[in-house]
Length: 222
Image (cartoon, helix red, strand yellow):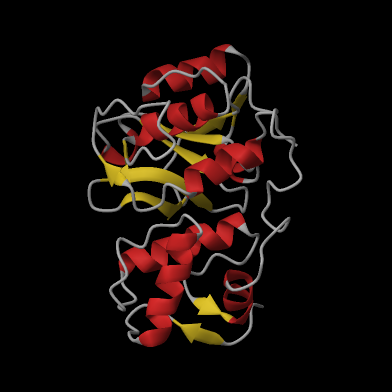
């Protein structure tokens, strides 16, 4: 348990402003410091919680508040990873720091821009890989093929338990028209993904949304 809940969606005021400012300082966009605990603040809190191995609730509880206003050094999940190795934890952390960035279908994310802020589902993944020196296709169908052709395919349940594994939704599943790709947070039911125009980059739930999964060739998994 994470303790008493201090702030949640619908709250407003000075403490919300303080949380929004701190999240922004740490690289988790809340869509602006407006003193209102809305959807984008929820999503920023979720991304922060996922980065620092806290229960992902989107609420500021005792543990989240304490971590937000601590020094953090060495406490994020990728802290001990070598900076010259493309680890799954570093890959996930890059994706989490893009929370609330815009979703633009068919965009071409600039892999040389550390502050890129427009992604679609596949571009978020290829951009984060490129930032780590790993070449990976920028189209969802090509990402599915690259993982499976390398013999790195996984079931949904397997991918759900592996931080940094990919989750694939093939066109036609649940009536979907397009392929979709998300990144597993390894918790069993959470993702980070460029979800769509309504949410942008956000923490999502796996549920029954996906058909299969896979590892990324070139990323080092535990």
